Length: 134
Figure 1 (cartoon, rainbow, N blue to C red):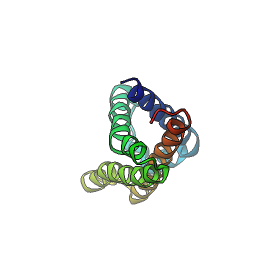
Figure 2 (cartoon, rainbow, N blue to C red):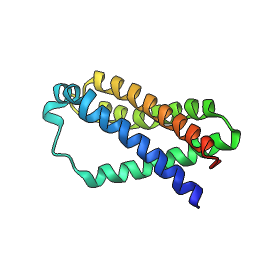
Figure 3 (tube, rainbow, N blue to C red):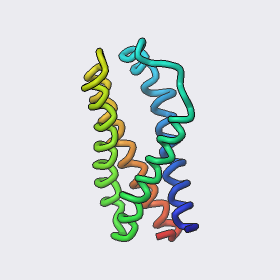
Figure 4 (cartoon, rainbow, N blue to C red):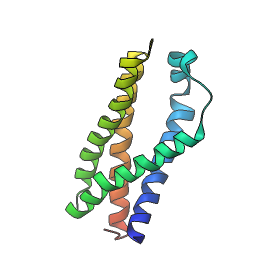
């Protein structure tokens, strides 16, 4: 159980750092420009619930199997696929159901979700291997 807690906290830490950098620095103006009126007041409870569920998913579906295979490459590839799958679910649903949802937001989010999940998965496996948690 201690191993899973370490993996969970590692994934959560990397993901939080990357996602905050993305949301607060890199893409802040992008989302405001393209989603302006669609954006509401940030609601932290659903955001925290998403992060907790997503981090558990990364550990369960990507990091743990990658450690069993002793493969950071596996973590990056499967992490990329999981990120694409999850972000596609959100963005394509928005594209299908919300009036004026911009296609460019969907494309950028898919690239981001794929990239960040791959990077976090890869870094977590490298960290766990370095500290011999696997």
